[in-house]
Image 1 (cartoon, each protein chain N blue to C red):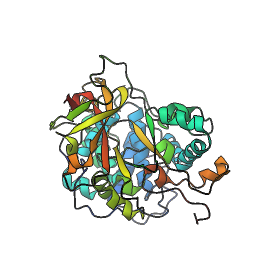
Image 2 (image 1 turned 120 degrees about the vertical axis):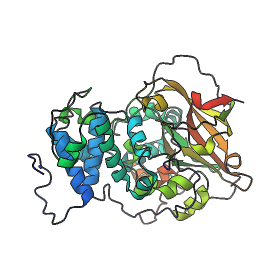
Image 3 (image 1 turned 60 degrees about the horizontal axis):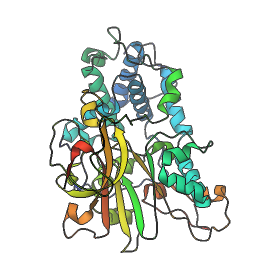
Image 4 (image 1 turned 135 degrees about the vertical axis):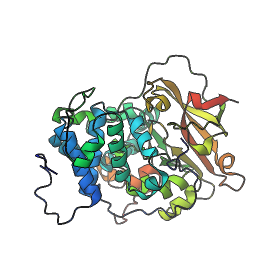
Length: 219
Length: 210
């Protein structure tokens, strides 16, 4: 979706403000939110792409004015309601009012903690040979799905060069919408800064994205 | 709220709770009462994030690459696999790509769409990495962004920005500082900063205050 989360190239957000000796969490509740998201994801309530989609679909003014973990919280709460793991009445009451729904991987308990401390595996067997080779010129498609996608707006329509092939991975566009893993070849595609940002752009700049094969056309 | 699971919080004496804090507590209560999560397991996740991951992991990998040419070669070929051979570093997921800074090319990592970051190597990302200014400008005006970190590159150095748009993760291998000949891995690791592995900083130089 063409949401405010897709920020590459936008102006007006001001300076980057590094915080010296930044703590891992600024409020205790932030750590609870992080843990709940990781736990419920590991228990099988949702996949990582779905959780990203729920954050992206927050209204733009909410997305832009909420802190990072507030976005995580709002996305988590809405996702769990919509997936039937809790109800709006329960959220309003602050307590459970009916039995839980079965989780794919069962209750998240201490035995599961180690599992969440290693990133998931996203490589999958290839359903077909790769269409592109390293060095091929490709054009990022001019697509505007209203659902989840990982092709940022700022590369759409532009020509780049395939630099790396990462193998076949879970396709976020379908996984996020719970339409299956639908594995696709994943490439690093590198673009010239001037192709993306015009003749006035930094001539020394190159930008790459990791693009799934369905995002790309041969040139 | 009537709940029996207020284990984490009753030792704190908050006179005022923010709306968000109340909502987060309520959600945890509901998830617990419905049997989805064990609060002690949430505690353990937080503890693991606080103690097991952090830039010290990445720093050891970088220092090893600076002192061991075979390891460096393997690391640049397949980051996850090479790091997997180092028993003392925290476990790393698949699809970690290590990119090398050279006098000709400076690498910088961003996630314009959200906050993708090699957290096993660097810990949880800082707020600025996840915030709009960095996400919006890194791909368009990286030199302007670097200036805000007090980093200046020669004007003909290529800047390569890696936008982490998939489940691949990128770690920058910075250049080894001059004046460190003969240093041990442990000494070198002390020079490796988090930002130098994101590409928004350089390693410390010998003798500079840390």
